[in-house]
Length: 149
Image 1: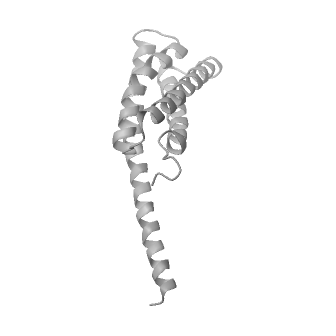
Image 2: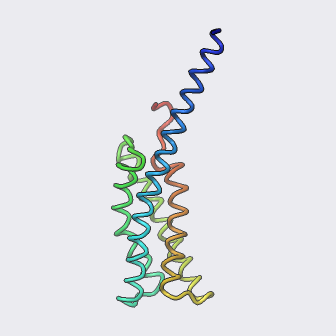
Image 3: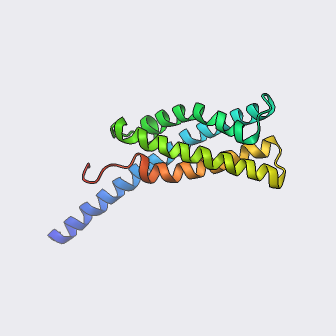
């Protein structure tokens, strides 16, 4: 076997291992995210129906409760991140404030313009929050600093 083929084989094996790690993170992210999303859905619905909060208030009240669970779950289980809390926690907090406000305004608007009942309002809020959170967490919050591997 020539040296070039040996190097190509090693690169291929390394890329395969990287793909497996990435897919593992993705699956764990989905599991943690799904658990937090279900919890968020339940809280949104209960705050809207049980406490009769407005859609805006119901989503904002549920959000901070889920942030703590989400951060720890994504950090420890999904990403198994070794990034310092001083780096990842502020990023996570910034993301979650932005997502909370985006979700609150979106659900208020959707409820007023489309007449969403509490179930659809909670589902809409869950989709908005989960989608935005997934994309930004994956690409920014727990990303490793350049040259850290």
